[in-house]
Image (cartoon, rainbow, N blue to C red):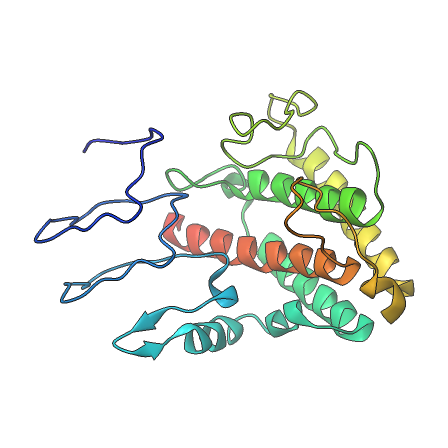
Length: 243
């Protein structure tokens, strides 16, 4: 199997009678792609941002159906889009309860195991530390350097120009990861405890840079919740496969 990780793209291209059977696309932009008379048996799509747009299959937007099915095994997930302090607080509690269930049910020998090309449970928690640091510490609190050294940044960040020198390259112990993660969870809990509608409406800068989007404080909290639920779904999927 060949791998193309170059910078070339296929924007606006047309493919007729070509086979992509068994192909894998990672971190690719396929927005606006049109497919007609295609064989999609076994097609597997995973999009973290699916609920922001549409996915039309045979003339039907299936996003609402997908979201409803994702909410069923994750009670409280629907609150990731809550607009009130009360809704966001309840959503945060629900996410932490769900994470506690997963941690409590994972054998110690599995915390560093991972499916090929995916993060382990330990790595996932490190990434959630980074997500909290970015959106609470950097976005909401406007800290100049919000990141803890054990945070795990997304693949390709260095190539995109982000300074990754602050992050450790060794593997922290499971106990250290749990300790830092618990501290970040408490920070979110403490912030939401006193958050008001007026505070949630305040505008902030995107902690990852760029001038095209200035999220509100509420938006930043919702991103944290989206990260929590998305990565919980990923890790439960992978732990089931590993089992």
